[in-house]
Length: 592
Ligand SMILES: Nc1ncnc2c1ncn2[C@@H]1O[C@H](COP(=O)(O)OP(=O)(O)OP(=O)(O)O)[C@@H](O)[C@H]1O
Image (cartoon, rainbow, N blue to C red):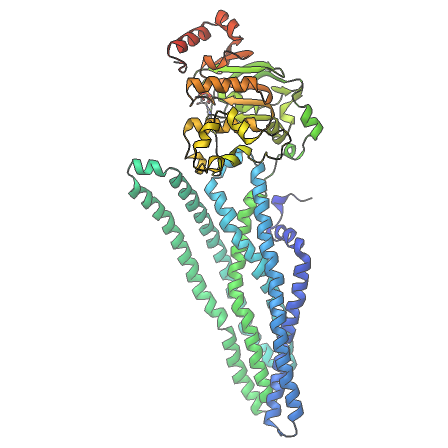
């Protein structure tokens, strides 16, 4: 199969259109009926006029018949036109929903590298703004393609039946208009693409500014922020004006095509009338056909504009949808295999890691094991590589193969999704959703058979009593990124969330940094006594946090400089002993 990224936009869209082939198929039938009725009405109008100019009494029955046909056709046309619009617009909306869902689903699978290259604001703009262009493409543009197609093929045939030469005269302005529109569309497409990119940049810029609004206020730099915003906005305005200028020039040319046709029909047709080659009724019918041709031509301008916007939007959406997902990410362990994961623990084997931007390795030759049921501690100064080590274990960072093994299997062969469903990492800066306390804790895990009650999870995170004081208790909203909570409350809430469902390996990366000593003791007791994971890894600056763990690794400059239990390290590591003693004196402070 051709890779998705090589597919043309039309082919790509077709896969979505085919999901609604029944609706589009029926819609095409109804559009054909509408156009068929439309081209037959002028015939009866023309006949009626010719009958009116003849002997009225003799022609009465024929006149009634023709007028009745005009009325019946017109009424049926209202119905078929309405139904055809429903049959095209509904799939347009459905495709919008499908694309949005697919884009979001893809976004949940993409890795850090993608997010490093694409700003959040731009992605939001693509999913929320650019998608509108695709909806129009799948709805109104699709409808008009068939509408215009039928109108432009049926109408000239009927005109030809009346007067082939006059039809040929009328085709000249149609062809000229088509070429002008064709040139304009290419130019507008390039402009629309630029405007869409500028919109994405504005969205990204706005998100950045709003996220840092408190900084902007405290530094009193509102005028700078306003000027920056205005500059981006001005660029969009400029681009919109260029687009409007092209439309203003091209649309009247398109719109006036029928007037030119009418002038031709009246002048050349008038000549034919004098020579008795045409009747008044036939000229009236031809004038009606000119109007019938004009309607698709007027919409042609709008459709050209919607088409090129839609195509640019589709390209934009494909920046997300065409992103390749790591093959491993689509191959998952069975439920039984998931259950078995970690049965033999983790082996870290000569792990080294260098950030792509750096020359020197941040981690050097790290080796250790985590045995099921064991609690491991990592102690180290600021910048010693603790978080880097954690991010290698949960594969937030991409490591080379042959360095970390789970149950003897290379971790790089496991999908990140499977790994992360077993390894739960809680960081010192937890992310809370703009939702209630309860939803932040259950966080999609309420169906888990071993989920704790909300009360128990809150108690284990030492948050229960505090939450009872909140205005709406568990239903209290925590604000964007948990802004309504203190740093310590956020950390404890994320700890409650981590304990809510069991995991194989729980990694606590400096999670207790923002809580006082008494709370820290309580939380450590909860973690040690009511372990909700097979193994626990605690990262901290504080030696006191690690006193009770089975094994402690002491990191310095990305290397393990000592390894052992608290007692062993007090004997064997001067660094550890001094750190512990200093922290005892300063009542649990960080490594100096
Ligand atoms: N994304 C990154 N790109 C480049 N270098 C990084 C990146 N993240 C961390 N580093 C560097 O790696 C080194 C170790 O950082 P790391 O965050 O692992 O230390 P840490 O021990 O967890 O520190 P802390 O206790 O402050 O969290 C630091 O020198 C840091 O500058």
